[in-house]
Structures are given as C-alpha cells and as structure tokens.
Image (cartoon, rainbow, N blue to C red):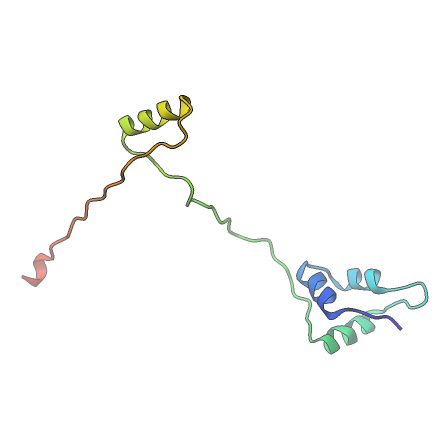
Length: 105
C-alpha cells in the first residue's frame, strides 16, 4: 500500500505535474501505479489535472519608480545623490483642472 499525502499531491498538481510524473514519483519498487490508479487517486482526493498555459502578460512593478519631468529637479536629485545624500527631499504638487461642460449650460 502507498501512502499519498493530499496536500503534497495538490502541490505537485499545482506545480504542473502530469500523470506520468505522478506515476513516476509515487510508484515504489513493490507497487507500480498505472494510469487508472492515478485516475482513482485524483478522484478520491477531489483533484483534477489542468492544462497549464504560458502567461500572455507580464506584471511590471511601477510603484517604486517615478518620472521627473522637471529638468532642474532631476539635476538637483542627481547632484544630491552623487554627493552621498540619500535622503533627498522634494515636494510634489499637483494641479487639478476642472473641465467645464458647456453642453449643460
């Protein structure tokens, strides 16, 4: 008899392991699993092997980077950094522009 941990089997399946990999990993010298055995194991564990696709997207972390539009400010930050001052302070201001809707007047 082979003892198979449901959590380990689920981890293997979520990592993309297919039936052949399950047979190879969980078979022993005394017991060789078959494709039918894998079906029974998956059914009793309530798990399914799903098809994995390569991601069609890439998540880019843009929260740490910012664009400095003001050339003088950019030069000031660069000079401070070159002098070893890693605590460059600056103030960010934004201007809110309200758009008037002339159609409602």
